[in-house]
Amino acid sequence: METLRHIVLFVHLIGFAVLFGAWAVQAFGGKREFTRLMSIGMSIAAVAGLVLAAPWGLPDGAEMNYAKIGTKLVILLVIGALLGIGTARQKRGEKIAPAVFWLVGILTAANAGIAAI
Image (cartoon, rainbow, N blue to C red; front, side):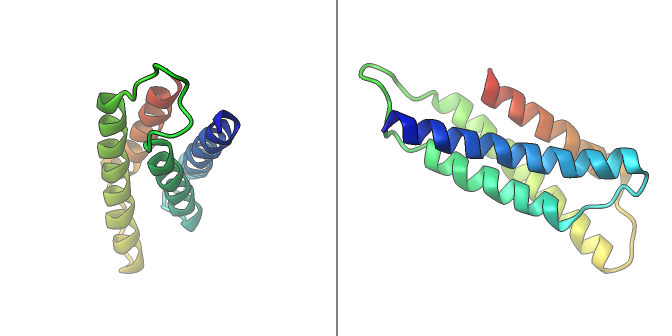
């Protein structure tokens, strides 16, 4: 069971890597727009994170860190909201506000950092 939990953790980190990698390509490529790949990465991270939040496969005596889980969930919801807002603006032909675009990258890096620490 512990091996399965480690696999889900790996998938969770892959989701953040896809989200952050797609964001970094846009940030340093000069376009600064949200892509479908960012939404896919966020979805992978969200589903794997929810699976990890279930208390299964923990060693005896280990307890869940609910403050960490709650913080990561709130950050992920904010990232999802910002991606949704930015994608809707793009579909209408408007530009994404620079603060919204950069905040997605900062929050993604913060969320991955919280996961690793």
